Structures are given as structure tokens and as C-alpha cells.
Length: 414
Image (spheres, rainbow, N blue to C red):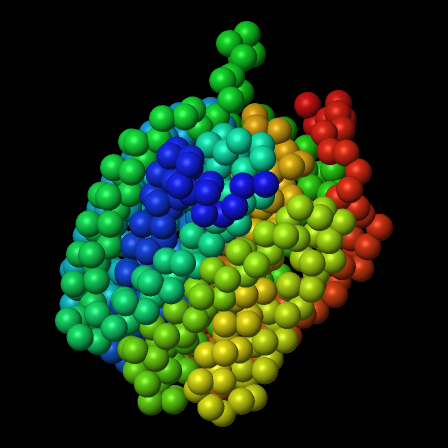
């Protein structure tokens, strides 16, 4: 089995796709962390930060059913490039956020970026198996699963530091340059990013294509289990709104906010890499998913009761080690269950459910963030995740991923 290092050094197409994702994720955090610090300073309220996070995830969730069909019908490389250019325009709008009166412009800019991400993410996720050889899948997924965590560490920590040193607007310019670089990297991918479509088959319209994917998911309990697993961590994701406020409580300011997001990313980076061995043992995946969800929730319950900032950082790392492991295990399992012609739509549904859960969590936190203690918010988010994990495991206890995949689609789903 190729190592995680060799799959990067030997496979040029995978390397370019991976590097493009690194830059996109890094640009995202060079925008979000400074913005979450800037908005409370301009408006005197934590609500604007929560609303920006909710707009980011909510728009993505609403568009994913449609953008998943686009990823299955059109050139995924072109989709990625166009999405990067659109995100660049959204980032440039953030340069106009200069006062409480222009705070609304942050929601517009982030909304444009969210639309771009909704198109980019299904295309990049569905393309991954097409740039890897069969014996590279486990190592490639471990590396790809670490991309988000890697750039959360870099983007969040540097974004927090640069925001404190030179201000948020310099960070927005860095993100803009990064998106240009990402578009350039996507042009260097030479391997086709999807299996050629049978010319004799008619191109499906959007809604029938969505219904086909939903029917496929609904008639396969294993796929249904896998596309609902990320929602546990999503429902606990309202904790992100509290990060700037928590840093203020401990007196560590923008740098502390950057550190909280950075250790979050560090956990999400280490989790997928260490889970590589689990990926080759399919019998471990479902129990591992339940364990990872539970650990996420328990870590945030712990965060709500400790009183020392370094220990808070350690528990946030543990939570997102579990969250990153959850993400890569569920993605890998889905790739083995879903054929290429449906993969964009199924992954879009998977991401839609996860981001809807995030949006619900963040809107709930936005409703109480100015009146409820930060520790109560942390404990509530952690408890919701633990309860979901227990319910999910009870519902999936009879399922196994060791049986062959690829059963025929029932006629109702065709």
C-alpha cells in the first residue's frame, strides 16, 4: 500500500488537486477568523459573527442538492476554477466592511463566497477517486482528509496573528491572492475528473437527477447511515461562534481566537492521518464513527467546566481530532458504496445535511449568545452531539460495511 508521502510525490494530478484544496481552505480561514474578530469590534455584539457563520453554512446547504447535479454533469475542473474566481469577488467585497453601518456587507461577501464553495466542494470531493489509483485510495483519502485541518491550523493561526498585527483587511487581500493561486493549480490537473458519460444516455434534468440520488440513498441503509453521520458534529458546531467571546473571557484577544481555531484545525489534521489504518478495516468504520461523534461531544462538555486556557486548547484539539476522524471515515466509506455517476449528488447530500446541522446550531447560538454564559453554550452543544451519537449508533447497530456494495437500485429509485 502506498504511503501518504509517496501518493503526494508520485501522483502529480492528486498533488495539484490537494494543493488547490489547501489554498482554498486556507483562504477561507484568512477571511473568517479576522472577520469574526472585526464584527464584534465594529458592532459591539456577537450576533453579527453568528449570522455570518450561519449565512456561510446555510447557503452552502441550500445549494448543495443542485450543485451536486452540476458536479455529475459538467467538467469538474472548470467548476472548481470558476468557483475560485467567484469566491475572489466575494472576498473583495469584505474590504468595504468599515463600520457598524456596513456590517451587512460582510453577509453579502460571505454569501458570495458560500455560493462559490457550494459549487466547488462537491466537484472536488467527487473528483478525488478519479485522480487516484485503486491502491492509493486509503492513503489519498488520509492526505485529502487532512487538507482542511492543515489549512485551518495555518489559516486560523496566521489569520489571528496578522489580524492583530496588521488588521483584518490585509488578511482579506492574502485570501484573494490565494484564490487566484488555487484556480491556477486546478488548471494543472491533467487526469479526467469524472468517468466519461455514456453518449447514448440522455442528460437528466436537475430535479429528476436529485430524486434519483435521494432514492438511491433512501433504499440503501448503509449509505443513509453514512450521509447522516456528520450531522452529529454539525449540531455541535455552534461552539465556533463562542470562540472569540471565549478568548475575550480569558483575556487573550485575537491571538487567542486564532489559537482556538488553529488547534481545532490541528485536531482535524491529525485525526485523518492517524485513522488511515482504520480505513482498511471496514468492520471498524461504523463503531469508529459512533466513537468519534461521542468523543467530540464529551470534549466540549469538558471545555465548559475547565478554567485554564491551555487546557481549553487541549480539549478543543481532542474534539476536532474526533471530528476530523469522523469526516474522513465517512467519506472513505461513501466512496466505496457509491458509483461515480451518482457520487457528486450523494456527496452533495452528505454535505448538505452536515451544513444544515451546522446552520441550525449556529442560529440557535446566535439567538442566545448575548444573554447566555459562554460555558452553558459550550456544554449544550457538546451534549447535543453526544445524544445524537447514541441515537445514531442504536439505529445502525445491525448494519455492516463488510458485505459487498453495489446492490441494484430498486425500480422506484430509478
